[in-house]
Amino acid sequence: MSPAQFTFSIAFFLGIVGLALHRHHLLSTLLCLEGMMLSLFIGMSLWSLQLDSSNFSSLPMFLLAFSACEASAGLALLVATSRTHGTDRLQSLSLLQC
Image 1 (cartoon, rainbow, N blue to C red):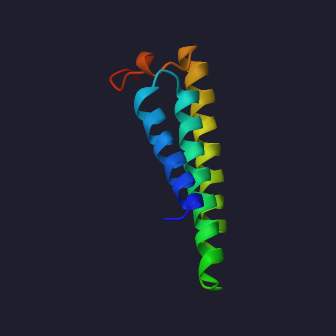
Image 2: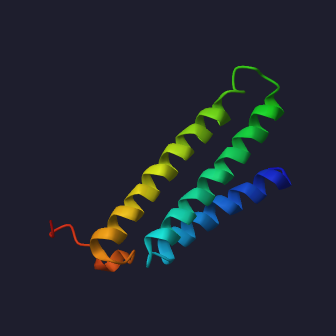
Image 3: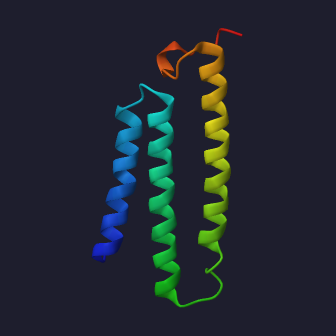
């Protein structure tokens, strides 16, 4: 494993650890998800450059497009929950409330 691959795999696992341990606010959860997607994008970009194949060159762009859609949906949920509940704390959200 090259040092660049090791760095991006560590960044991805740090995002997972942040997602598992710091679940107090919805914004911090969304930031951990974005960090994971960014490390995946950079890792896939390096992987397609190392392979020198044109078949995999569009794969990081699709991942970036899905990441943008995920970020917009997450921000829409953040705005909706902060308007309805007054806070973005995940512990105040309940599936039993309408």
